[in-house]
Length: 315
Image (tube, rainbow, N blue to C red):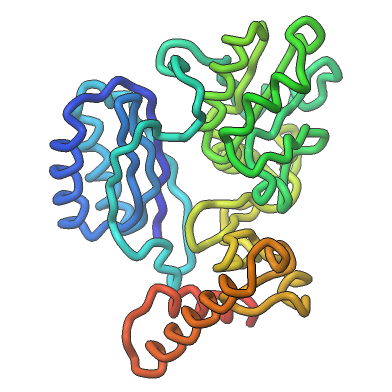
C-alpha cells in the first residue's frame, strides 16, 4: 500500500468547489485518507495505488496557487488499510496553531537539507527543538533535542515565550514529522524577534529518506517516528514500525505497555488508565464488544481492521 503526504501554504479561494471536485476525483481513483483545506493552503495524507496518487496530486497541482505542491511516498503493509474513507474537510487552519496573522507562505524559517541538519545537531550554539507533542516524542527524536512536552500544538507559542529569549538564543533549529508544523512555528519565532531560525526541510520523513544508516550522510534519528494513520509509526527505513496504538487515547504503545495490567484492548492503557472515568471505559468496552460481534458475523467495522493489525504486529 502506497501512502502520500503533502502540504503547501498558499492563498486559496473557492474551497467548497474545490472540495466537491477533488472529492469526486479522489473517490473515482479509489483513494482513501484526509485532506484539509483552508484559505491558507492544503494539508493531507492519502493512500492508494501510487499511479493514482500521482495522477490525483498532479491534477491538484494544476491549480495555480498549488503549482508548488510536492508529495512524499512511503509504504504500509499490504494488509493495512491505513485509512478507511476519503474525506476533505474545510478548516480555519491546515494545522491548528491559534496565533493570528502568522503567514508561512510569506515569511518562515530557513529550510535546510539532511546534511546541513546533521551539522546543526553538532553545533553547540544551536538550540534544537522538537515541535511535536509528547505522545510523538516519546517514541523517537533527534539526540539533544528539546522536548516542549506539549499535548497540543496550540501550547507551543506559550512554551516558547516562557523558555526562550531572542537575546540569548541566537540560533534555533526545529523539526516535525513532515515539515508543516515547523512552517508555523518558525514564522511565529521570527515574529517574536528570533533572528536565525532553521527548519528541517520535509521534516523527519524526508530526512529518513535522504540519509543512510552509516557513512558521512549518517542517519542520526533515534527510535521510530509517529505517523497519523493505522501504521502508528515508521522506522528509520520508512517501513512500518513496531508500535501499536491505544484506541482509547490514541497514544503509541510499546511491547512493555501491551504487557501492562492496565492495558485492555480498545479500553485503556498505562498512559490513560487514570485519565478517564469508569463510565468512559465502559463505553470503550462496549465499542470493542460491538467490534467483536461484527467480526464474528463477518461484517465490516473500522475497529476490526485495527485489532487484526495489532494481532499481526505482535505475531
